[in-house]
Length: 156
Image (cartoon, rainbow, N blue to C red; front, side, top):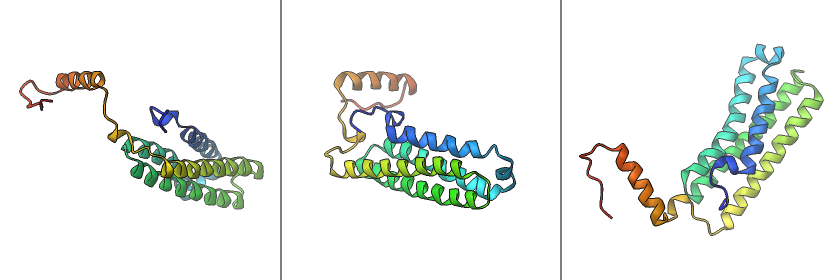
């Protein structure tokens, strides 16, 4: 995580995006449009994987990141379970199921490895990183430009 500057840099997030696209490709099938309950549930679960990885990263602390990664992992399991429903109801072919289920399992294993690596790392999170003086000055300059002129801005 130390080299990632945004959640989009994370390989696990990129794979979860592929998973979302795989699920959404099924939503174009007429069978899925008739089963709105399953369609809604599986898309929400897939989007939850992607979203919780992003939210955990943006929270700024290791503990919060791990918490949201566990939610993402659980949503990944939910997607996989719903893929079985889609297969059993013949909404998707066995080959489509296999491709998406394997991507789901791979994403889940990436999330697990990410969680374990964070747990043992000394990384505390972005909110604990002290800004470089130049970065802080630039940030404060931009912030002052957004605030009203009479806003009581704290001194250093």
